[in-house]
Image (cartoon, rainbow, N blue to C red; front, side, top):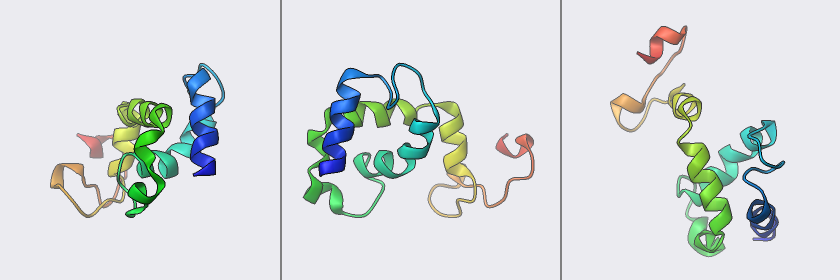
Length: 96
């Protein structure tokens, strides 16, 4: 909860973690905190009350809609909807 609170306060004043631009800080942080607040991780979301961190949810939702993030979430995925799976990736053509 402490980490979510710190992140939420930072995102209350900035669009992204390091300021107004999407950077490696967002890329490195999103897979963990984004997945957590968007309900893609274990059941701790209720315990951590992630819905109360509205700035983190806004940030994660915006990043989640980025085309590169959508593509990246498919790579090496062998579960879920078939159109969201890609067991192996060898070239950009694999996304078509």
